[in-house]
Length: 231
Image (cartoon, rainbow, N blue to C red; front, side):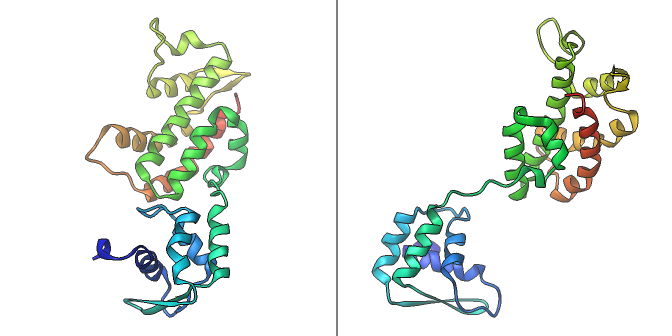
């Protein structure tokens, strides 16, 4: 059925499905927000204009399970939709996923990981989120040891870094400025995220959940902060 609809009917059908029960009208701002939310047919402002301009002055009504939804197509409405669609999308704030002080300590070296983590967590993608959290942990440990001139301890003759498990063990036995890189309690607590990251990457039969990740984040943040203080 969906494939047989005209483009504007597809738009309005999706909009109708997004409306809360009892709300019968769509604002231009709502239309713009929904059109840019990542459906299977991404539309530019120009494409939206081409679809909606011939319909100016008409009220389009689409029925869904909760009743009729009406969108009145006006010149002003189309202009507002276009201006909103032309604005660049805001990237999710990485600091909303991890404490701000950790973000600051990690610095620009983690810009890509933090940006992708924010996107994957906002999109509720547990596999990507778990792998990225594991990557950030492993990368933090490696950079701490490299910064302190301990490359020989963490890499082989073939310049291959040791496993994350080995890095965590080394962090518990290595002191920097009279402080261990990671105390044993935080090392145990961070095993949850490590497990989720490992299984997300290597066990195709296991699917971590966002609830599991959120449960582990407080422990992860405490341990990561302890490691990152040495960056």
